Image (cartoon, rainbow, N blue to C red; front, side, top):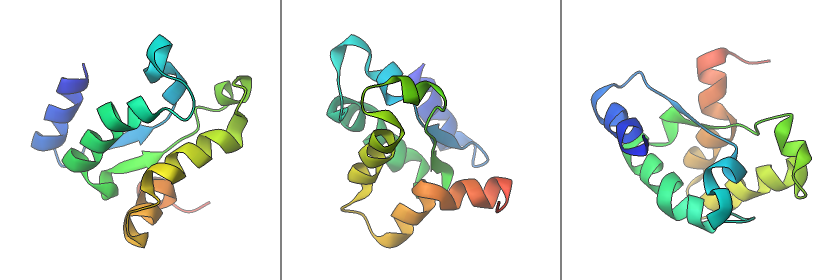
Length: 104
């Protein structure tokens, strides 16, 4: 399925991806802070989609059931983009969603 998501990103410019629920993607093979998800999924999605077609989401309310909580979920994705330029950070952490759905 992941390969299909990547293929869609290469062939359809109107497809966007929400980065959320890392605990679901990691399954039994990963734990907070989900380095395996970053390496296996996020980095490839960023390469294929670029920051302007990726957006962070928390998977609320389910993230509140995790021991790291809402803030921990935000902190994970922030750590994944900390070495990127400000435009990349801004797009993924809210800019893409605002562009698609409008400002609150």
